[in-house]
Length: 170
Image 1 (cartoon, rainbow, N blue to C red):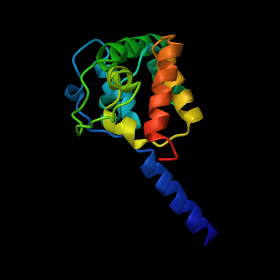
Image 2: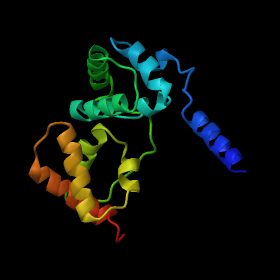
Image 3: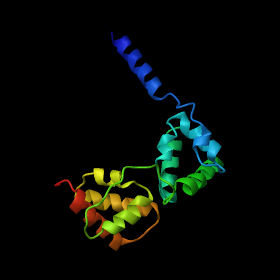
Image 4: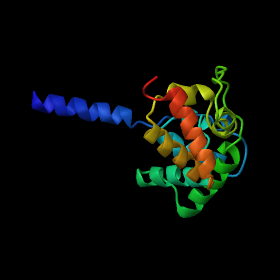
């Protein structure tokens, strides 16, 4: 019985780790690095993960290095090419997949949320989260840091707005 359970667990892990093959590279924007991304990244997940993300150079570097540590087959030159490609095509302000329209409630910080947060996220994602003020402070600081921005006044205003409108208490 124990051997059967172990065999079932190994089979389930093998399926979960199976490559997401069959992902067309043409789903990605053209550019140096597209084929590397299409090959290396789809060994573990679908391209939809990348297509839906927006991050700054620091954030992409964290993602790519994390994936290399988890087994992504990239040498240093390929990793640099992938980082340049992701930053150019999936950085802040790049075209996002269509999302449901969301209207934010009025309040101090609304405009900053609409301009800063939507560089990488749709507003549905922003408004769906319910976090404490401390958690919003951490999330906003992390997002600004990923883009190399030092804007403590903006961060406080955004965090205050988000915790007021989308805090745990609501």
